[in-house]
Amino acid sequence: EPEVTQTPSHQVTQMGQEVILRCVPISNHLYFYWYRQILGQKVEFLVSFYNNEISEKSEIFDDQFSVERPDGSNFTLKIRSTKLEDSAMYFCASSQGLAGGRGDTQYFGPGTRLTVL
Amino acid sequence: AQSVAQPEDQVNVAEGNPLTVKCTYSVSGNPYLFWYVQYPNRGLQFLLKYITGDNLVKGSYGFEAEFNKSQTSFHLKKPSALVSDSALYFCAVMGSGGSYIPTFGRGTSLIVHP
View 1 (cartoon, rainbow over the protein chains, first blue to last red):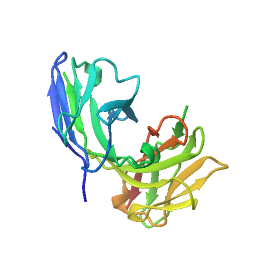
View 2: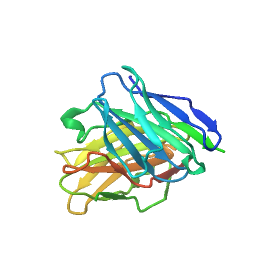
View 3: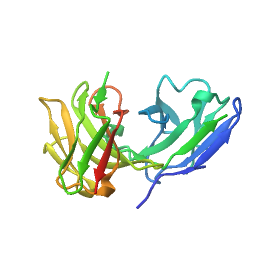
């Protein structure tokens, strides 16, 4: 069964450094998403991406963050200057895009645990 | 604004007994409702969803959920719990109008005792 994959599984970085989290969505999916989950807290939406542009983003997704689909398979989240409070599990998800995304099932990757020291 | 409430942080049940994990929601328009399960150090796995039609939705691993419009609820159920069902369960909702981004509940930890 196809699945979303993410690399690395764990990333440790120093405050102020840039990190890139990578995701390979399911191949025939059209919508891509990033979420984060701070330890013990709820899953929070960051951004959605369709047709090579951001379709929606949350308040959390400020200028520090950017997303890119550099080729036909990868979907990346860049955090430009990491802060301590960016420490979290980051999940990538993708969906087929039926009915324009509404009611779509999102399939999640295993996550990247980001630790900012 | 859409929201989801999972009123129980933790549900304890004995193996073989029925289980219920509660979820209520608030949304504009018709709701699209989802249940996901998260095992330790893993991503969210899709269990089932309600879009339209029959109020009782059957999903993976023997789970089912009942959509109740009047009570704005979408409780997850299983007739006979397994120890391996122990995990974190998330309910999510999106509305038929506005954003198609789901809002997740805080999660309920299900512990099934042998």
